[in-house]
Length: 165
Image (cartoon, rainbow, N blue to C red):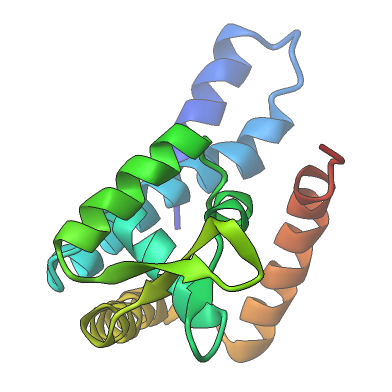
């Protein structure tokens, strides 16, 4: 079965036979898949009234386990945004009733961000919708193929995820 990347690679091989375009065979497919995943994710989230960034914050809190709270600094680490952006996101989620700010008992100046029951329900529902979308995307692969692919992708992404600083 031929795909758009096969056509792209063939064209570059014809036009630039002096270049090794083999990386395009893998990474152009990863890039195209990322765009398809982004669309599927946005659809899954919008069905539950969430934006992707809202899902990221809510599920960071949900994964923390009961009582589903983290400091803003911990949320920064998990979502890779600036402190100003995180403050804005927390404000917007609090206005929607999905999170609440609480005083940090271990730091009088600090706050904790806690998931509200509604926030927990929305995160759980959106996650279930996302997993259904992603299962459909992976349906053509066997369980062994999915495991192999996950391992290969881990090899490529781990160096980026483990860069100090």
